[in-house]
Length: 210
Image (tube, rainbow, N blue to C red; front, side, top):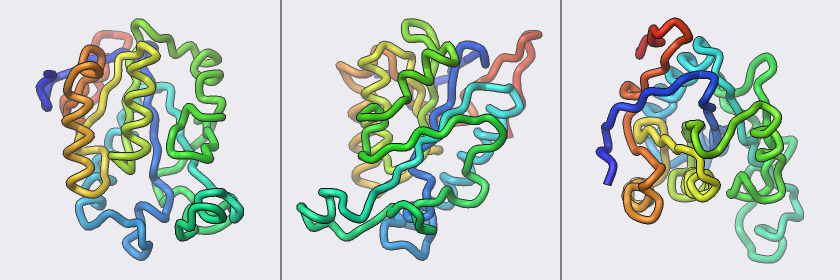
């Protein structure tokens, strides 16, 4: 089992950052899906890691989760509506959205690989399995984060999940991080903390950890 605080060294040209679950419905304390006070601390850690990734000019992808009003989740299975397209709740939280040419992938389910163009974008930006690292951060830990991390693992990427940069209900978060740390997913999945992700610049220097 990987140490939960193991150090991981990555190179910007051979790594990517995948950000998800940072819509207002999940991040704002005013919304019903807000997981609780620890989310605020986790989002702060995410902002610091995002700043480091941008400083290092890493490849950054944002998953934008939205739903239509007639989504089967609501119209057939009776869930209360959330992440409705065109509403404030489905917008990226302040300071957690894309800038400049960072790519946004629209997702209609909690699995970022289902009916999205994420794999096309990986090929476009030369994010390669069997060598490249992909950092996964955001929420919700036992839903979108788990699907993304396990999907990346099965596609043979080196997966990094910084536990201080994911959020969700505590029981679900601990269960999923434990599951990702165990066989069969732990052979290429590292559970760590953001300060222990060392981003190596081209001259051999490291981007500062805040």
